[in-house]
Length: 307
Image (cartoon, rainbow, N blue to C red; front, side):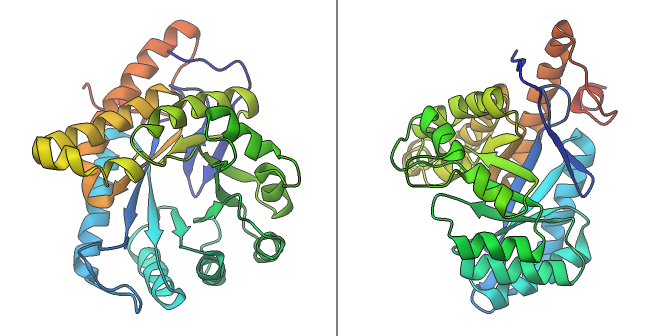
């Protein structure tokens, strides 16, 4: 199993520990809610949704997290500011979990995370994301609001190989590095997303996770769901069973690359992903003992799923 030579950062976000060597802390599993075409959303522009069903889905996540030991973060997706504010208010009332403020542009994300801070959720709200399109006004506004945690999307359109992800983090000619941009924005808990574009690119993103953790020691992961949920052929030729197997397998492969977090897609997929990832976490932790790595929390899947 992987052991990184570089010291690994660990961040505490509203009680969720994220980072470290594989086997020290459970992988944080991030599921999307209120996403495009989510069945419980009736009007994505106004933020009208089935609150009863949304609470059921979140409570199911909490139960899976308790059973497996894997913490969870909600990926809250909103396409308008008005909708996002309603989503954030709802999340604040039904769970204590951290959440991503995930919108299509800074024009949506910035007012949404500002609202989260205004109602006292500054320790739970994670900006998603700072990427190669980041502008100075976005950086300065994040600093003004006081945002401390953000996803850093390490996609480099000029170099799609794993090394390109590292380049965009450190900086390329005539372009500020994303880590420097995050520092200027006041972010001190960056989470590196190594950017999945399609199914074949999952392998590149996994290599990039290992590379990033070796080079900068920051928590890293990726969104395998970006590819699997749009993979029409697997749904067409292998039915829902094949799709579920691929969803879980992609998650497990991400963990074996050393990931600290996984964006696994729609919240409804949690019952497929949590058991598979908990098993992988337990196996990684058990093998890590040979390298002197031990779980640092008593709720690690190693202590929960085999007993």
